[in-house]
Image (cartoon, rainbow, N blue to C red):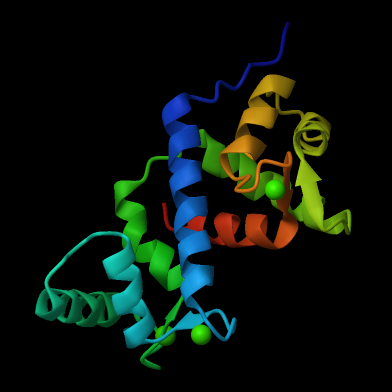
Length: 165
Ligand SMILES: [Ca+2]
Ligand SMILES: [Ca+2]
Ligand SMILES: [Ca+2]
């Protein structure tokens, strides 16, 4: 009997891509790279995402997001908090479970970057049947600079974010 084939849909890939884009935005505005954004940085993010164009509305929006997302009450949002706030709009389907399952093995390999071939190998070892093409598409959806590889640190953030979806 052939093992079940996992189908990766394009909407799952789009969801993954959106999460990766949000994390990229988050990192861009996290000017001191401590993994936390302040209310002022959050306002800049909201403006850049085009959520609002009126200054007072941006301030209100940021305050509201901070209130909802700041789980530990330190007045700043972590990347997980940030994605948690946005995650309601994203659909990643079984791709989320696959990546969460594959991440420990990818991180354990000690490489700085992961490519489609490596994802395929890890998933195959785990007994999951995802085609090489799908693995390439998964990596491509998170590959901002198009060099065919995703930083393991970035993947870690995406996987953490997926826990919210
Ligand atoms: Ca910061
Ligand atoms: Ca916080
Ligand atoms: Ca890349």
